[in-house]
Length: 410
Length: 152
Image (cartoon, rainbow over all chains, first blue to last red; front, top):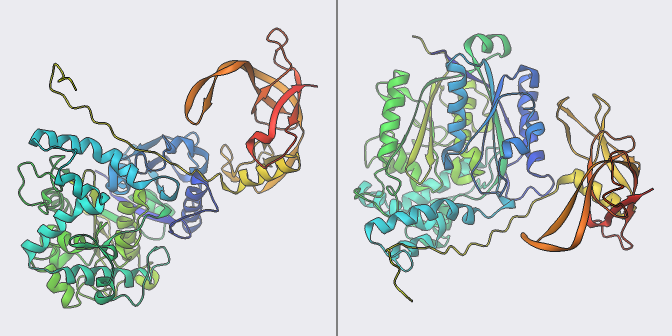
């Protein structure tokens, strides 16, 4: 397979709760124009397009076609990807397949969400409702069960079992979730494209926010954001011709488990925080990238964390530390921007969540770290290899992308 | 309640979908123009074509259209259909009577604008028929301000 590099990135000028000044297509075009401006490339340089966003969130079917001229896609091959929260990284993967296969040389990925125009919880219910139906298989009365009690909190309710299971098995306390959230809010304050920023956040200030569904507090939860992200990927030959540098994809993988696993109804799984797909996908991506010890070889990590406990939980599942060790790394300051294992220097999904872009931004943020273009939130250490993680689907689907500063050999 | 012959579950999902589509600055200006009985299009700096309603991009040229221009209120009927039902708050209901919807090429523009057409029999409707815009008496800056088209 051919080498594929990310040669350009574009964002909407801001990621905020409500972009009242533009419509959906106009907002997306801002990121497209930003990417063209950053790269000096134009529509004529692009061979094919991949587009992604959450199904049902804005109530716009086929937005990739509806916004065709706003993403400069007229007359080009275009496909839409929708895999849930992981959509943005699946879109990057699709572009990788386009190029690695030799079919196309330069592919643009466009992802967006404008959550202010729809009802995200209703959108989520549209996705989750079929999952609730799976409870019937376990003989659970969905109309009045404790399962529905958890769901009443929306995705925060559904995730609370995962969080409490993580705490019980890791030895971490709710104060570590507070501390992780505070770290990411502080990182977000350095990122012009982050949504919830608080340069002065502390574990104590997060601990003062309301408890939503134990152990999840308001301060642990992502916002709903409006924003769009664009990336241009190219073959090695085209990257040399069109760009000064690139972040190279060394390994990628995705994995799903039983649709009812990982959250409310566990099926045959007894640990709601098991996240087996994360462990399997990470292992496969590391193998493809030739990484033997991620603890030593990965310089920074971007984790998909709609909820702050997930940063710690997934660090363990990804093999970036031992089980039960993540909260100790947090206490030791090693997860900070200037730490040994900087995680979510961007502020993470918990600070910015235009969902279609969220898993994609994990990759683009790792690419910016490798290219040394992250600005104020550039991590202190040199970044040669970076790990990005996406999570979503029915809470049991994980995508992994490993980036590096040089093309892969062999 | 009678037990069903087969044991199945029929979930009722009482979701009330509310979407608040922002029309964006181009359509906002287009609708503001309605208050002055003006129809605004946007002109492409590349190919020079004018499209109505005003929009941001000329897709074929991949150019941003910054210039808004007032266009003629007269044009030619390009095509039409006859409707017998209407859509009201998402539900299809019978119309009071058959009505004509036309695609109108306003003079000097390179696009087609959809509008209700009155005063034309089916026998008389043919491509090229000259029509003009008719406004509501009270203008609200709403799509409904441009009430219909009728023969010149």
